[in-house]
Amino acid sequence: MSIQLLRNTRVFASTKLSGFTADDTWEILVGDDLQFSQDASSTDISPNEAGPVPVRGSKRFTDAVNPASWSFSTYILPATKDAKFVSPDSILWHSLASGSVYNPTIKEKGVFQSALNQTVSSKDSAHHELNKFNLFLLVDSVWYLLKGCQVGQAEISIDIADIAKTAWSGNATDLTPMDTAPVGMLALGVSDADFLSYQNLYIKNKL
Image (cartoon, rainbow, N blue to C red):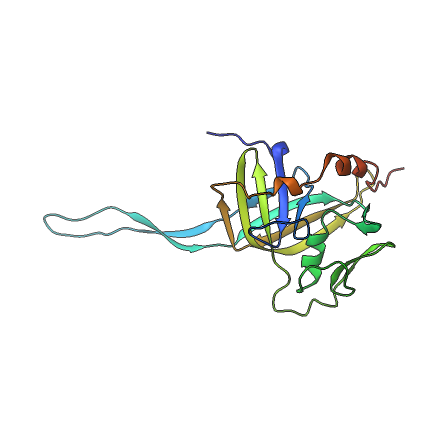
């Protein structure tokens, strides 16, 4: 049995399945509550024959594959980049509030980033389906792909003895282990310099 450590996990969100760039792929800094799974329903068929040479036994058939589920939490980090306020999980906020393509320069289309703040508008939420994205998870040395993800819920908590964070959960159409690593994705991750700059941005609510 192989053991994969959660602390060695990295999560990337992308609007593409290949050809990744910094405009469509982002690393999401998740907490230690990351979970993802996909279940299937099955039925056991058992023939019961009579006669001198009866055929007996059972075989299991898969009836349906349920949607994959995922959940994790992210700390609320009001960072700045290119003279604009941004958050590492902005693609998640956009997918919660809009059905349009992610473009943080357009107002009232989900996430909008400016030199003053980052806002989330739900005025563009009247869609049959809200924005979808893909999650790529590197667990130790194994890559997993959650394809066609949608955000189901985002819950903000600012506890008196904790740091402000958002608990995310949602579904995906499919969960598959990847045979090869996505080309160029690790190069788009959070740099050491950006990670160090985040350390003073956590929102604290303590006496």
